[in-house]
Length: 557
Image (cartoon, rainbow, N blue to C red):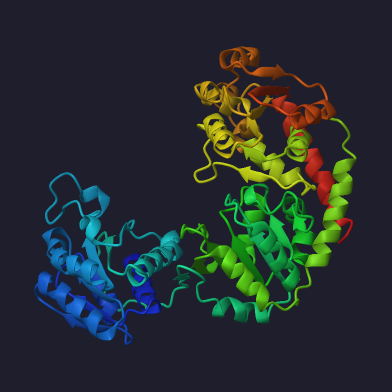
């Protein structure tokens, strides 16, 4: 009989511990922890120590960590066993000692109805650990996620302020192999987590750059106003790498070297192959557009992600290392040592010129893609982009332009709620002219936000297609008779009433030129600019425009 899923899951966790510097594991006896105990025992690079009592086991592991100055782990079964780890974890917190507490657990279906040796183990140690992770039951598709999650937790144990972390690991039976066969010894792909108050260790990145001829820089959403845009483009020039800057990156608008047409480029399979990178330097959050993100994740490049606040984006687990610290400082440090070995910069700039020419042929059509492009081009000061179609359209079709904008968007969890209120806060907080591009559903969702925005220097451009336009691009649009009722959700609201409610000046432009004039005009108060479009026509217009842009890209291939 082949190895079991429990064995592979436990072997992946064991391999991750080793990759993260764990050399010693203390094992208290128990049944539910069997898969992990056996996986640890099967490794020659882990020294396992059996200790009968969990309290003593945890303190012994604490001593191992202190003595070796490496993170040490302690394992127990489910139930009250883990509670005995608490005193040692208290000491680990106050003594800044990296202690990895691993509690085996019963699966979800055994909780809540009196199964023996079963308690609520999530967050068992409260504030006495630096991180607490409750892992899912073993699943074949989750092995990469398991390795990354465990590595991230251990990175918190060994980074200042050091201390203990808790891994809660549920297993279903069979806990041991039915035929008594040994499990595998695995060396999973484990990302590094490197952090510093200033500039983290960049030696791995510099070595990768030293051998790269096809590197790219990719910048997702990033709102800080700290000189990052100038710094990242200086790095791109120094390396000879193109800088793919999405709309909310604050490295696109006003930067002539920004490559903004990434979506059009990678929609072409031919051109996507031509620019496949060997190294990717990634900044900011995850990309808004699905196609560029999928392309990046599918490349065989070495990917380094640079984080301001330690919050990683890597759902497909392709990142080799996450580096957290002074991002602008580290960009400048990389620039100082850079050698212009990249070959993709000139190619992408010339291809983008063809895309720009194709877009300029579209004329004065009141299509949503061109409305978004017009608003971004005409805006000054702050530009706020709502989730759903507005940010996607600006990202896909808005060139860098000559005017530097500070761009904001609620892309943490990508919701359409509270967008008007957020934009009003940005306008009032910065005291600068602010333009918000938003869809009609999001604008109505935050109805009380219009009252908040009454006195703000805010221009709100509402693209009104009478419903949820983004759903028309999804497969559900053609697969259910209930689409219009539950997804399209036409509301029939006249935005004149919204303007009246908030005291906003209402504008209804009939051309892109008129729209641009309204957006550019100075304002001291709230303005509502309603642009009406057709949801069904919008889908076909996007398809035709994307096809034209791909053709322009391939004309240079």
